[in-house]
Length: 188
Figure: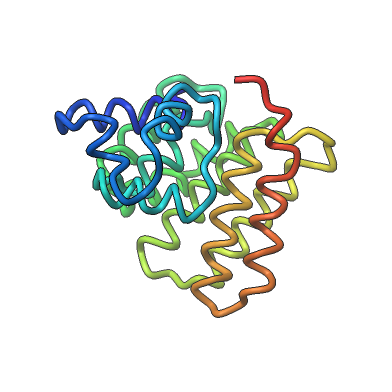
């Protein structure tokens, strides 16, 4: 999986920007260096500012790693292809095919399945309420594990986004807090 720092560094280099140019009026060059080397996790505002400077789309950060929705390699490749091409209509239709839903077996696969459906709901204007329900189902599949997976953290962040779009600031803040819980203990 590409870490946040890897994505920022690769994008910066493609745009032929130095760390100093990228960090100007946002943070120090040394802070950007630590982020790019995955030694420092930026706060939300810093991340937003860096993404805007580098024209990085939220989607590119959210699922830089594609999660498996079933045991069938072909199905997972189709999901990855539809997602990367932003073909949310095709992705939604594919995820709702009985041949796909029948192969979703594990809790992690179910969690990924509902996460992708929530993303489709957001992009296809199926309504934020529909996305919220899919996200809640996704997070319920995570169980009560003490250590959060990347998939769980992403689900919490997307749910925070949905809540913020609905004007539910307290709920959004709670989801962000959950997503960041114990993040400093992650070994990069």
